[in-house]
Image (tube, rainbow, N blue to C red; front, top):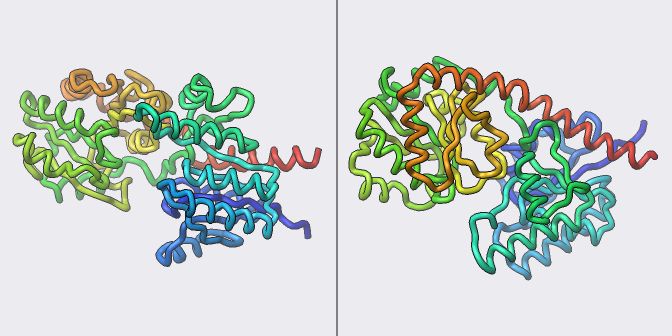
Length: 387
Protein backbone atom coordinates (compact mmCIF):
# COMPACT_ATOMS: atom_id res chain seq x y z
CA UNK A 1 0.00 0.00 0.00
CA UNK A 2 1.35 3.42 -1.02
CA UNK A 3 1.75 5.82 1.89
CA UNK A 4 -0.29 8.98 1.65
CA UNK A 5 1.59 12.26 1.47
CA UNK A 6 1.40 14.33 4.64
CA UNK A 7 -0.04 17.84 4.96
CA UNK A 8 0.12 19.99 8.11
CA UNK A 9 -2.16 22.98 8.64
CA UNK A 10 -0.68 25.57 11.00
CA UNK A 11 -3.07 27.95 12.79
CA UNK A 12 -3.00 30.09 15.91
CA UNK A 13 -6.26 28.73 17.31
CA UNK A 14 -8.57 25.82 16.55
CA UNK A 15 -11.41 28.31 15.97
CA UNK A 16 -9.81 28.91 12.56
CA UNK A 17 -10.11 25.20 11.78
CA UNK A 18 -13.73 25.11 12.93
CA UNK A 19 -14.70 28.13 10.88
CA UNK A 20 -12.78 27.56 7.65
CA UNK A 21 -10.89 24.26 7.35
CA UNK A 22 -13.27 21.59 8.62
CA UNK A 23 -14.69 20.47 5.27
CA UNK A 24 -11.34 20.87 3.48
CA UNK A 25 -9.71 18.53 5.99
CA UNK A 26 -12.47 15.95 5.56
CA UNK A 27 -12.09 16.01 1.77
CA UNK A 28 -8.29 16.11 1.74
CA UNK A 29 -8.05 13.19 4.19
CA UNK A 30 -9.36 10.85 1.49
CA UNK A 31 -6.13 11.37 -0.45
CA UNK A 32 -3.65 12.77 2.10
CA UNK A 33 -2.68 12.27 5.75
CA UNK A 34 -3.69 15.54 7.42
CA UNK A 35 -2.14 16.98 10.60
CA UNK A 36 -2.73 20.18 12.59
CA UNK A 37 -0.28 22.32 14.58
CA UNK A 38 -1.90 24.96 16.76
CA UNK A 39 -2.06 26.62 20.14
CA UNK A 40 -4.21 23.88 21.71
CA UNK A 41 -6.18 23.70 24.94
CA UNK A 42 -8.16 20.87 26.51
CA UNK A 43 -11.45 22.13 25.08
CA UNK A 44 -10.08 21.69 21.55
CA UNK A 45 -9.37 17.99 21.87
CA UNK A 46 -12.97 16.77 21.70
CA UNK A 47 -13.47 18.65 18.44
CA UNK A 48 -10.18 17.44 16.95
CA UNK A 49 -11.26 13.84 17.58
CA UNK A 50 -14.21 14.37 15.21
CA UNK A 51 -11.83 15.18 12.33
CA UNK A 52 -10.09 12.50 10.23
CA UNK A 53 -6.64 13.64 11.37
CA UNK A 54 -3.47 11.57 11.51
CA UNK A 55 -2.12 13.72 14.32
CA UNK A 56 -1.94 17.12 15.97
CA UNK A 57 0.73 19.10 17.77
CA UNK A 58 0.53 21.84 20.38
CA UNK A 59 2.64 24.86 19.44
CA UNK A 60 2.24 28.07 21.38
CA UNK A 61 1.52 30.53 18.57
CA UNK A 62 0.28 33.80 20.06
CA UNK A 63 -1.40 36.67 18.19
CA UNK A 64 0.84 39.40 19.62
CA UNK A 65 4.50 39.70 18.68
CA UNK A 66 6.84 38.32 21.37
CA UNK A 67 10.35 37.74 20.06
CA UNK A 68 11.35 35.20 22.72
CA UNK A 69 8.11 33.25 22.59
CA UNK A 70 7.92 33.39 18.80
CA UNK A 71 11.52 32.22 18.47
CA UNK A 72 10.76 29.23 20.68
CA UNK A 73 7.65 28.42 18.63
CA UNK A 74 9.65 28.51 15.39
CA UNK A 75 12.24 26.10 16.81
CA UNK A 76 9.55 23.72 18.15
CA UNK A 77 7.65 23.77 14.88
CA UNK A 78 10.75 23.21 12.71
CA UNK A 79 11.64 20.16 14.83
CA UNK A 80 8.10 18.81 14.36
CA UNK A 81 8.32 19.39 10.59
CA UNK A 82 11.65 17.54 10.37
CA UNK A 83 10.32 14.65 12.42
CA UNK A 84 7.17 14.17 10.34
CA UNK A 85 8.75 14.97 6.94
CA UNK A 86 5.67 16.73 5.61
CA UNK A 87 4.97 16.96 1.91
CA UNK A 88 3.37 20.38 2.48
CA UNK A 89 2.68 22.84 5.29
CA UNK A 90 -0.14 25.39 5.04
CA UNK A 91 -0.74 28.40 7.29
CA UNK A 92 -3.77 30.64 7.89
CA UNK A 93 -3.69 34.10 9.59
CA UNK A 94 -0.63 36.42 9.69
CA UNK A 95 1.06 35.29 12.90
CA UNK A 96 0.75 31.60 12.10
CA UNK A 97 1.92 32.46 8.60
CA UNK A 98 5.16 34.04 9.79
CA UNK A 99 5.99 31.28 12.28
CA UNK A 100 5.10 28.56 9.77
CA UNK A 101 7.11 30.09 6.92
CA UNK A 102 10.27 30.50 9.03
CA UNK A 103 9.98 27.03 10.58
CA UNK A 104 9.27 25.45 7.21
CA UNK A 105 12.24 27.17 5.60
CA UNK A 106 14.54 26.02 8.41
CA UNK A 107 13.18 22.46 8.19
CA UNK A 108 13.57 22.35 4.41
CA UNK A 109 9.89 21.66 3.64
CA UNK A 110 9.50 21.81 -0.14
CA UNK A 111 5.89 23.01 -0.34
CA UNK A 112 5.24 25.96 1.98
CA UNK A 113 1.79 27.49 1.52
CA UNK A 114 0.02 30.48 3.03
CA UNK A 115 -3.45 31.86 2.35
CA UNK A 116 -4.09 35.59 2.76
CA UNK A 117 -7.54 36.29 4.19
CA UNK A 118 -7.27 40.01 4.96
CA UNK A 119 -4.73 42.65 5.88
CA UNK A 120 -4.74 44.24 9.34
CA UNK A 121 -2.34 46.97 8.16
CA UNK A 122 -4.84 48.51 5.72
CA UNK A 123 -6.54 50.55 8.45
CA UNK A 124 -3.27 51.42 10.24
CA UNK A 125 -0.99 54.39 9.69
CA UNK A 126 2.69 55.25 9.95
CA UNK A 127 5.33 52.88 11.29
CA UNK A 128 2.82 50.25 12.46
CA UNK A 129 1.32 50.01 8.98
CA UNK A 130 4.74 49.57 7.37
CA UNK A 131 5.84 47.01 9.95
CA UNK A 132 2.73 44.85 9.56
CA UNK A 133 2.88 45.17 5.79
CA UNK A 134 6.53 44.08 5.82
CA UNK A 135 5.53 40.92 7.72
CA UNK A 136 3.06 40.03 4.95
CA UNK A 137 5.79 40.66 2.37
CA UNK A 138 8.13 38.37 4.29
CA UNK A 139 5.47 35.66 4.48
CA UNK A 140 4.97 35.91 0.71
CA UNK A 141 8.72 35.74 0.09
CA UNK A 142 9.39 32.75 2.34
CA UNK A 143 6.55 30.57 1.05
CA UNK A 144 6.60 28.64 -2.21
CA UNK A 145 2.87 29.01 -2.94
CA UNK A 146 0.58 31.93 -2.05
CA UNK A 147 -3.19 31.61 -2.03
CA UNK A 148 -5.58 34.55 -1.65
CA UNK A 149 -9.24 34.11 -0.73
CA UNK A 150 -10.58 36.73 -3.14
CA UNK A 151 -9.78 38.21 -6.55
CA UNK A 152 -10.12 41.84 -5.48
CA UNK A 153 -7.86 41.18 -2.48
CA UNK A 154 -5.27 39.59 -4.77
CA UNK A 155 -5.38 42.62 -7.08
CA UNK A 156 -4.87 44.87 -4.05
CA UNK A 157 -1.92 42.83 -2.78
CA UNK A 158 -0.31 42.91 -6.23
CA UNK A 159 -0.77 46.69 -6.42
CA UNK A 160 0.84 47.04 -2.97
CA UNK A 161 3.75 44.80 -4.10
CA UNK A 162 3.06 42.26 -1.35
CA UNK A 163 2.56 39.40 -3.83
CA UNK A 164 3.14 39.00 -7.56
CA UNK A 165 0.87 37.79 -10.33
CA UNK A 166 3.26 34.90 -10.86
CA UNK A 167 3.30 33.62 -7.26
CA UNK A 168 -0.33 34.08 -6.13
CA UNK A 169 -3.52 32.22 -6.85
CA UNK A 170 -7.25 32.34 -6.02
CA UNK A 171 -8.86 28.90 -5.83
CA UNK A 172 -12.30 28.46 -7.45
CA UNK A 173 -14.08 31.84 -7.32
CA UNK A 174 -12.61 32.79 -3.96
CA UNK A 175 -13.54 32.58 -0.26
CA UNK A 176 -11.47 30.45 2.08
CA UNK A 177 -14.13 27.79 2.59
CA UNK A 178 -17.25 28.56 0.58
CA UNK A 179 -20.72 28.18 2.07
CA UNK A 180 -22.65 25.09 3.08
CA UNK A 181 -25.81 26.13 1.25
CA UNK A 182 -27.84 23.40 2.94
CA UNK A 183 -26.90 24.83 6.33
CA UNK A 184 -27.22 28.49 5.38
CA UNK A 185 -30.62 28.62 3.73
CA UNK A 186 -34.03 30.23 4.33
CA UNK A 187 -35.87 28.57 7.22
CA UNK A 188 -39.25 29.91 8.31
CA UNK A 189 -39.11 28.04 11.61
CA UNK A 190 -35.83 29.71 12.62
CA UNK A 191 -37.16 33.05 11.45
CA UNK A 192 -40.40 32.94 13.41
CA UNK A 193 -38.81 31.46 16.56
CA UNK A 194 -36.01 34.02 16.84
CA UNK A 195 -38.12 37.02 15.85
CA UNK A 196 -40.77 35.99 18.37
CA UNK A 197 -38.17 35.60 21.14
CA UNK A 198 -36.92 39.14 20.45
CA UNK A 199 -40.38 40.64 20.09
CA UNK A 200 -39.90 41.44 16.40
CA UNK A 201 -43.16 41.72 14.49
CA UNK A 202 -43.80 40.49 10.95
CA UNK A 203 -44.08 44.10 9.78
CA UNK A 204 -40.63 45.13 11.01
CA UNK A 205 -37.72 45.17 8.58
CA UNK A 206 -34.62 43.82 10.33
CA UNK A 207 -31.17 45.13 9.41
CA UNK A 208 -28.69 42.58 10.71
CA UNK A 209 -24.94 42.63 11.36
CA UNK A 210 -22.96 39.50 12.25
CA UNK A 211 -19.29 39.75 13.20
CA UNK A 212 -16.94 41.44 15.66
CA UNK A 213 -18.56 44.55 17.13
CA UNK A 214 -15.74 47.04 16.67
CA UNK A 215 -15.08 50.34 14.95
CA UNK A 216 -13.27 48.94 11.89
CA UNK A 217 -16.33 46.84 11.01
CA UNK A 218 -18.25 50.11 10.50
CA UNK A 219 -20.45 49.74 13.59
CA UNK A 220 -20.25 53.47 14.40
CA UNK A 221 -21.59 54.33 10.95
CA UNK A 222 -24.22 51.57 11.10
CA UNK A 223 -25.59 52.81 14.42
CA UNK A 224 -25.67 56.40 13.18
CA UNK A 225 -27.35 55.53 9.87
CA UNK A 226 -29.93 53.27 11.51
CA UNK A 227 -30.74 55.88 14.15
CA UNK A 228 -31.46 58.36 11.33
CA UNK A 229 -33.52 55.80 9.42
CA UNK A 230 -35.62 54.79 12.41
CA UNK A 231 -36.71 58.38 12.98
CA UNK A 232 -38.35 58.23 9.54
CA UNK A 233 -39.46 54.58 9.52
CA UNK A 234 -40.63 53.28 12.88
CA UNK A 235 -41.02 49.70 11.60
CA UNK A 236 -37.24 49.13 11.38
CA UNK A 237 -35.12 46.99 13.70
CA UNK A 238 -31.35 46.65 14.11
CA UNK A 239 -29.95 43.31 15.29
CA UNK A 240 -26.23 43.14 16.10
CA UNK A 241 -24.78 39.64 16.51
CA UNK A 242 -21.20 38.95 17.63
CA UNK A 243 -18.64 39.60 20.36
CA UNK A 244 -18.52 43.15 21.73
CA UNK A 245 -14.97 44.57 21.58
CA UNK A 246 -15.30 48.29 22.23
CA UNK A 247 -18.02 48.62 24.87
CA UNK A 248 -20.74 49.36 22.34
CA UNK A 249 -23.56 48.73 24.78
CA UNK A 250 -22.51 51.83 26.76
CA UNK A 251 -22.04 53.89 23.60
CA UNK A 252 -25.54 52.97 22.39
CA UNK A 253 -27.21 53.89 25.67
CA UNK A 254 -25.46 57.25 25.90
CA UNK A 255 -25.53 58.38 22.27
CA UNK A 256 -28.53 56.66 20.67
CA UNK A 257 -31.38 57.03 23.12
CA UNK A 258 -33.97 56.29 20.43
CA UNK A 259 -32.65 52.70 20.25
CA UNK A 260 -34.48 50.61 22.83
CA UNK A 261 -33.75 46.98 23.66
CA UNK A 262 -36.12 44.53 21.94
CA UNK A 263 -38.28 47.34 20.61
CA UNK A 264 -36.20 48.51 17.67
CA UNK A 265 -32.74 47.24 18.56
CA UNK A 266 -30.93 44.33 20.22
CA UNK A 267 -27.28 43.49 20.85
CA UNK A 268 -27.46 39.70 20.78
CA UNK A 269 -23.84 38.84 21.53
CA UNK A 270 -22.06 35.65 20.48
CA UNK A 271 -23.83 32.79 18.73
CA UNK A 272 -22.82 29.26 17.78
CA UNK A 273 -25.72 29.03 15.31
CA UNK A 274 -25.26 31.91 12.84
CA UNK A 275 -27.43 30.14 10.26
CA UNK A 276 -30.38 30.49 12.64
CA UNK A 277 -29.77 34.13 13.57
CA UNK A 278 -29.37 35.18 9.94
CA UNK A 279 -32.88 33.93 9.24
CA UNK A 280 -34.24 36.60 11.57
CA UNK A 281 -33.00 39.36 9.26
CA UNK A 282 -34.12 40.98 6.03
CA UNK A 283 -31.02 43.00 5.07
CA UNK A 284 -27.45 42.13 6.01
CA UNK A 285 -25.14 45.09 6.66
CA UNK A 286 -21.33 45.08 6.65
CA UNK A 287 -20.01 48.64 6.21
CA UNK A 288 -16.47 47.51 7.07
CA UNK A 289 -13.35 49.69 6.76
CA UNK A 290 -11.32 46.69 5.57
CA UNK A 291 -12.20 43.13 4.67
CA UNK A 292 -10.27 40.32 3.02
CA UNK A 293 -13.32 38.74 1.48
CA UNK A 294 -16.61 38.85 3.41
CA UNK A 295 -17.53 35.32 4.50
CA UNK A 296 -20.42 36.59 6.60
CA UNK A 297 -21.85 38.34 3.53
CA UNK A 298 -21.97 35.22 1.39
CA UNK A 299 -23.44 33.24 4.31
CA UNK A 300 -26.16 35.91 4.63
CA UNK A 301 -26.78 35.89 0.87
CA UNK A 302 -27.07 32.11 0.95
CA UNK A 303 -29.78 32.61 3.58
CA UNK A 304 -31.55 34.92 1.05
CA UNK A 305 -30.85 38.23 2.78
CA UNK A 306 -30.27 41.30 0.65
CA UNK A 307 -26.86 42.80 1.44
CA UNK A 308 -25.41 46.26 1.98
CA UNK A 309 -21.61 46.38 2.08
CA UNK A 310 -18.96 49.07 1.91
CA UNK A 311 -16.74 49.46 -1.14
CA UNK A 312 -13.71 48.09 0.75
CA UNK A 313 -11.70 46.07 -1.77
CA UNK A 314 -12.29 42.64 -0.23
CA UNK A 315 -16.07 42.95 -0.32
CA UNK A 316 -16.32 43.46 -4.08
CA UNK A 317 -16.42 39.71 -4.67
CA UNK A 318 -19.28 39.07 -2.24
CA UNK A 319 -22.02 41.32 -3.70
CA UNK A 320 -23.27 42.08 -7.20
CA UNK A 321 -24.39 45.75 -6.95
CA UNK A 322 -28.11 46.28 -7.61
CA UNK A 323 -28.54 42.52 -8.15
CA UNK A 324 -27.78 40.87 -4.78
CA UNK A 325 -27.44 44.06 -2.77
CA UNK A 326 -26.10 47.60 -2.59
CA UNK A 327 -22.70 49.20 -1.98
CA UNK A 328 -21.97 52.23 0.21
CA UNK A 329 -18.81 54.27 0.71
CA UNK A 330 -16.36 53.39 3.48
CA UNK A 331 -16.80 55.48 6.66
CA UNK A 332 -19.71 57.40 5.08
CA UNK A 333 -22.86 57.57 7.23
CA UNK A 334 -24.95 59.34 4.59
CA UNK A 335 -24.06 56.81 1.90
CA UNK A 336 -24.96 53.90 4.18
CA UNK A 337 -28.18 55.64 5.25
CA UNK A 338 -29.19 56.14 1.60
CA UNK A 339 -28.77 52.43 0.81
CA UNK A 340 -30.64 51.35 3.95
CA UNK A 341 -33.45 53.78 3.13
CA UNK A 342 -33.65 52.46 -0.43
CA UNK A 343 -34.03 48.90 0.85
CA UNK A 344 -36.68 50.04 3.30
CA UNK A 345 -38.70 51.88 0.67
CA UNK A 346 -38.33 49.24 -2.04
CA UNK A 347 -39.34 45.94 -0.39
CA UNK A 348 -39.79 44.17 -3.74
CA UNK A 349 -36.16 44.90 -4.63
CA UNK A 350 -35.05 43.83 -1.15
CA UNK A 351 -36.73 40.43 -1.51
CA UNK A 352 -35.49 39.97 -5.10
CA UNK A 353 -31.92 40.84 -4.07
CA UNK A 354 -32.13 38.19 -1.36
CA UNK A 355 -33.37 35.56 -3.80
CA UNK A 356 -30.71 36.55 -6.34
CA UNK A 357 -28.08 36.38 -3.62
CA UNK A 358 -28.85 32.75 -2.80
CA UNK A 359 -28.63 31.77 -6.48
CA UNK A 360 -25.34 33.66 -6.78
CA UNK A 361 -23.81 31.84 -3.81
CA UNK A 362 -25.03 28.44 -4.96
CA UNK A 363 -23.40 29.03 -8.33
CA UNK A 364 -20.09 30.62 -7.28
CA UNK A 365 -19.30 29.82 -3.65
CA UNK A 366 -20.73 26.40 -2.87
CA UNK A 367 -18.60 24.75 -0.19
CA UNK A 368 -18.25 21.48 -2.11
CA UNK A 369 -16.80 23.31 -5.12
CA UNK A 370 -14.29 25.24 -3.01
CA UNK A 371 -13.13 22.09 -1.18
CA UNK A 372 -12.72 20.32 -4.52
CA UNK A 373 -10.52 23.20 -5.69
CA UNK A 374 -8.33 22.75 -2.58
CA UNK A 375 -7.98 19.02 -3.28
CA UNK A 376 -7.17 19.74 -6.94
CA UNK A 377 -4.53 22.28 -5.85
CA UNK A 378 -2.77 19.72 -3.67
CA UNK A 379 -3.01 17.09 -6.36
CA UNK A 380 -1.28 19.52 -8.73
CA UNK A 381 1.62 19.72 -6.25
CA UNK A 382 1.87 15.92 -6.32
CA UNK A 383 1.95 16.00 -10.10
CA UNK A 384 4.76 18.59 -10.01
CA UNK A 385 6.72 16.27 -7.73
CA UNK A 386 6.18 13.27 -10.01
CA UNK A 387 7.29 15.26 -13.04
